[in-house]
Image (cartoon, rainbow, N blue to C red; front, side, top):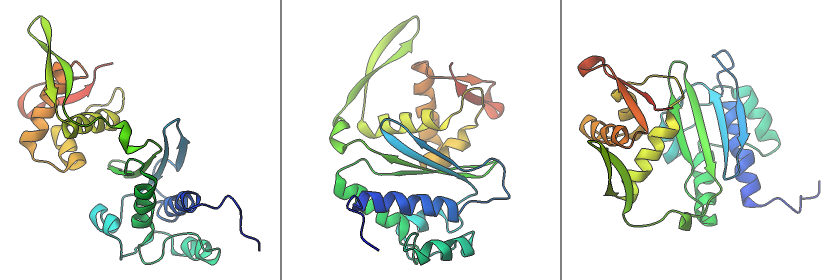
Length: 210
C-alpha cells in the first residue's frame, strides 16, 4: 500500500488520539463519544475515567485499555498506542510543532475523559503579568495576575458548565492545588463577576455568572 503524501506526524498524532479515545471509552457508561473541531482546537471526549491514572498516562510505559479487542484491531493497521506510549507521543508532536500543550481533564458523575488539542502557537500566550478588572465595593479596579494564575482562571471557567453548581473541592482535583489556593482563585473570579457563590460555609457552591 502506498504511503499517503499528507501523512505528517500531526496526522499520525491525531489518529493516535482518536484511537485512544475509542479504545478507552466505557461503552456501558452514560453519554457517548464526542469529537469536536473548533477554530483553535480539537476536542475528544469519551465516557469513562483514566484507568492507569492521569499522571501515569502522561508518563507512559503502562497500558490498561478498556477495550482490548478494539486495541488489537487498530494495532493491525498500525494505529493506536503500544505499551502506553500514545499520549506521550502526542505531547511530543505538539511540542515540536510549537503548539500549546494538550490538556487532559477528568470529570466525574458521570465519569468522562476530555482531551483538548490546541492549534495555537505558544507565542500567542502573552508572558508576564496581565491586568484584570475586579469589583471592589461599588467600583472596579485593575489588579495584576501572573500568566499561571490566568491559566488557572481559564481552566476553571472552561471546566464549569452553565447552570451546574460546583464545590470548591471539584477545583482542587482539576488544578491539583491546595484548598487555600482554590478559595483564593474562586474569590477573585467572583470579584471579576465571572462566577457567583451560592450558600455559605460548608454548603457553599459555585456556578457560572450567566
